[in-house]
Image (cartoon, rainbow, N blue to C red; front, side, top):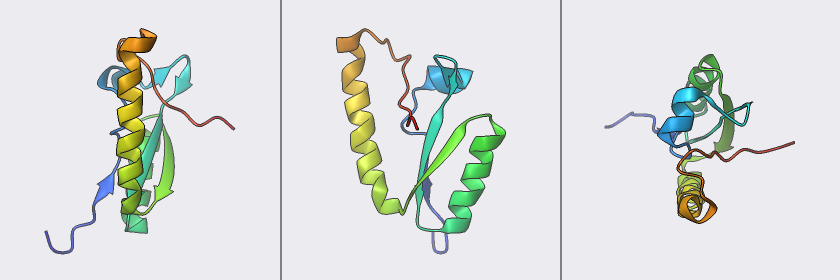
Length: 92
């Protein structure tokens, strides 16, 4: 789509935790990547309005790292007995 602004978000969160909006009493982090700053801002506002924490990781090329990050998260579920109920967060 010529002129479309692509933003990657929500792919590092499993459906169950996303539906509840939190894990362990903490709001979910939603990692956001895209080449258009305005589009990332719009998605960040959507994330915030849902009570989640937007984390802007920069350009769309970061999508590759986000996918690898989530693959590791997925691979950990059975081994750790998490049953798709976990989430990844950045702690200060």
